Length: 253
Image: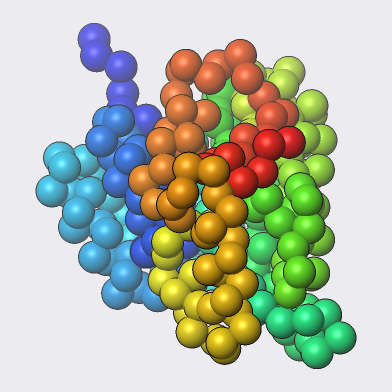
C-alpha cells in the first residue's frame, strides 16, 4: 500500500516567500493548507497547488488571534485528515528607528512575528505528538541573529523565534518531531518592495545591502522555499534545533 501523502500547513502562504514554500512542498508531493489574512491571495495559491495535482485548503485566519488559529487547525484536520509539517512563515515589520516607533507598532510586530508562532505550535503539536512524528520549520531572520538597524523590535522577535525553536526542539525530540529555523536574508517579496518605497532612506539601505551580498543578488522566494522543503523532508530526519541562514553569503554565522 502506498504511503499517504504528507500534509503541510503554511502560514502567510498567499504571497512572497509563503507562496514559494507552498508550491515547493506541493511539488514534493504534499497536500497543503494555506493560512493567510488575505483570503483572495490564499485562494489563488490554492488553485496553483491543485494544478500540480495536490489537494489544497485556503483559510482566512488572523494569526494573532489564538481562537482563530485553533479553529483553522481543527478545519485542516477535518478536511485533510492529518498534519505532518508546520511552516510558520507569516511575518510583518515597519522599518523605522526605534525612537520613532510606537507601542502600537511594537504590539503588531510582536503579535504577528512571535505570538502567532506560539499559537500555531500549541494547536498543531498535540496532533503530531499523538502520531509520534512531525516537522516544524519556523521562518526566522538574520535580523534575529545579528541585529538590524531600523528593525529593532522585529529583530528581537525573530531572535525569540530562534530561541523558542531550539528549546521546543529539545522538548519535542522524544516524540520524533523535528523543529528547525530558516533565516532568510534580503529576499525579493512584496513586503521588501513596500519597504523599498517607504522612503528614500530605506531604498538606499536596501541598495547598499544588495551590493554587500557575496553572491551579488537578492534572494528569491524559491531560494528560501528549497531550504524549507529540505527541513520538511525525510532527508532532515536527524537534524533538529538548527538555524540555517539563506542569505547569499551576506551573513556567515
